[in-house]
Amino acid sequence: MITWTRNRLYDQGVLTEIEFDIPTIAVGNLSVGGTGKTPHVEYLIRLLSSQYQVATLSRGYNRETRGYLFAGEHATARTIGDEPMLFHLHYDVAVGVGERRALALPQLLMDAPDTEVVLLDDAFQHRSIKPGLNIMVTEYRHLFTRDHIVPFGRLRESRAGYQRADCVIVSKCPGNMSHQQRKQLTEEIRPQAHQQLFFTHLKYGSCYEMLSGEREHILPDTQVMLTCGIADPAPLLDYLGTQAREVRLLRFPDHHYFTPDDLDRIEDGLSQLGDGFKMIVTTEKDAVRLALLEDQIVSRKLSMYVMPLEVGFLFSEKEAFDEYIFNYVNHARIAQFNT
Image (cartoon, rainbow, N blue to C red; front, side, top):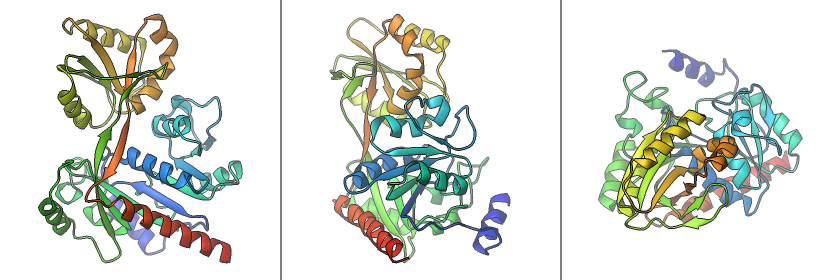
């Protein structure tokens, strides 16, 4: 009832959505997490950075600071959050965080005046800003059409909220998804006339050592200790199961800040694996939080390997998606200059 009332107030103009002239793309979801939103934001960063100066604005979930912050050389996962820190470390983009996005965006543009496109991370429910393009990500195994509002399911608001999206992406699809499955899901989602619908799957790269960056292959006889604090480790666990002889999961809460006691648990778990080559594998989001314990990791001589992750578009629709994004940005920039 609370979320329905809030959305009605925005829809009726009682609460105001601020619209900025600069092209803004929001990426979010209806559920509480685990849809694969972050790799889609990273995809957009890589795509748009080839032609534009890009900035990202996030709330900075689970950080230990408040208010607006611009990511500088002293930023850490604790000060700006793990996902913004991931963007800051891996890409040449401006990164800002702030709970009140309508106030934070002008500050971000002051700190990064050359910005040409802004990506609003996890902003589907945060309606104080009206994005120029609204992308909603829903997970293949937990489609919003089959879900319910918390606490009976994972949705943060009614399923009807999907109508605000300009583009719906079904994430974490099987890589061999058939055209018949696509048709069935399209009929279930029933995209509206103004909406685009795409299907993506996860692609894993080669592991690299967290501190040195040195690449390492997972061989068939490798034993893996998967250490992660993410909402849904199942896809990575399944993938590693196809690559290694044995995989054990040491799971922590989503966005968990690791402690020296956690390193003890990781070492204990590693010692319980059998003889042979053993690896500690983690995700890129976990790595930015584990890096806070770099001195301890070095002193313990722990090698932790990071599994990079990207999204791929199914049914040869990558070019169609890229064109869709560039068309929006180009038209928005023309309107901005005319204004």
